[in-house]
Length: 446
Image (cartoon, rainbow, N blue to C red):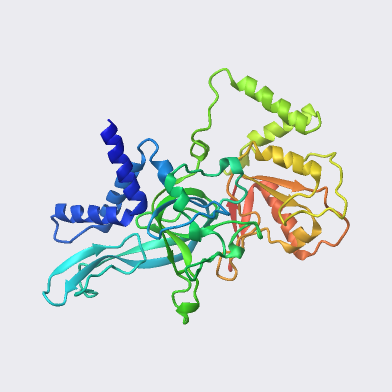
């Protein structure tokens, strides 16, 4: 049993530190077992890779050995391009680009005429070619595949207790070059601030490449991606004239991914057993009542709000239960928020802090005129690139709007459109994505 455990640990370690080496070995075995004249089936082998990785990582404790991509402010060292990472993220733009990639290349030895195939499905790096070998671009044995490139970001509003943690030793040597705007080895790692819903908030972003037959998940969905990390260029920059002026983008070649659910968000969170629900309900109500100044009725309403969920029944949305709490002291004009999306009032901050302990994601929107007039609440793609709006949030995100900081002033046209967008979310649970020819209403659950 101990020998098996050591073997599994060694295999997972190789998977994390040298995944392409593992894939190359799988490819050699696959070619040896393939008897068809058509050569390797890229889709079939892609499934073989996924099954192998998922099989090893399903072992107890194996998944936790993968270094975590997506912790803002991480300052680890010795990040290694070509290593396996895990990114829990929100898909901000699923149509960031499409690429045609040479997945299997036929090589020919210029001296002997010998031929062989190499596999580079999960990397943008140039084929590692030994001296005397070159790619035969005219060979019918070359295999080209399509892949979707999605722009993915750290999940907006994710609370600290719901952040993905890793207890792996390898985490100490991961993510050196992933913190925003930091120079590393002469490369400027890029993020597009206009593509994150909460402008000015620290976050991470990566171009996640989903290989055929898998397609990029839909917009604003939350996914847990396991893939190979490397630095690359944006597909929108490939035609640029000055390649040296282009920065390097963190890229993750997804080997497999899964949707994030309540059960997978914090898998070790204890679940109540039969008979404990009433006690936990009463304990939660007591806590909410204390936070709300002893108002038990407001505590009951708040608990019902937190438990509510919008569902569609025959094209009719039911279950929405937005809540308006009144009686909070007004903020003075000289009280300003610490950031664009941070509450300034001590009383509303107190309630927001309590909610952050109960829900995995919450976003604060202070109704300061400066914030409402200067922000963009709706996602907009009129320029051809989908720029994020404040309301482009993952489902089940708690939005806390603070009206105590709203004072006299002028609400301009943008501010009015922002409030109308928020009203649509409250009443209809829809977010409008503004596209060049026609706006599209997307269902949400905020």
